[in-house]
Amino acid sequence: MRHPFRIHVRGLDTSVGSDGRASVYAAIRSLLSRRSPRGCAQGGCGLCAVRLIAGEVVLLGPMSASKLAVGGPDPARVLACRIASASDLVIELGESLLRLSGRPVGASDIEKQ
Image 1 (cartoon, rainbow, N blue to C red):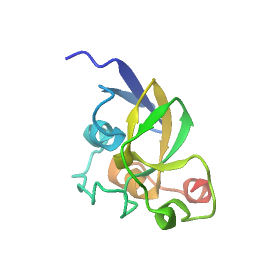
Image 2: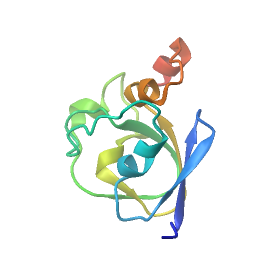
Image 3: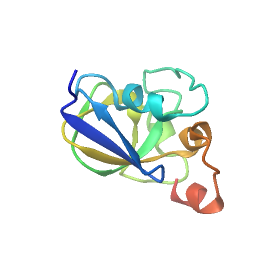
Image 4: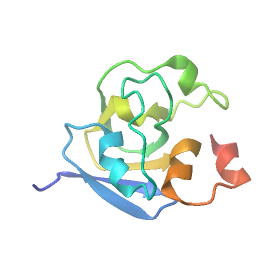
């Protein structure tokens, strides 16, 4: 199946296809080198927090405000399990997903959160 949208993951320098129907988290799970937990998939646990750098998304459901506020206010922070691609996207993984990617997490990564 051809995926109409690409999700570029900044920092991993890779991208993955998205059909625009499944969540962004479902699409990026294949990029994680360690076994990625499913998380709650309902916007409440915060495991799938990402920063939306560019692109448009469709909201699939509510997100926990407390999980979005971790590390201070950031209007670009979203929960990948609660959004779907509406265009090509550029995202940065949050700390939890960075750890699952196998990429070392440094202080500069945490400061961005």
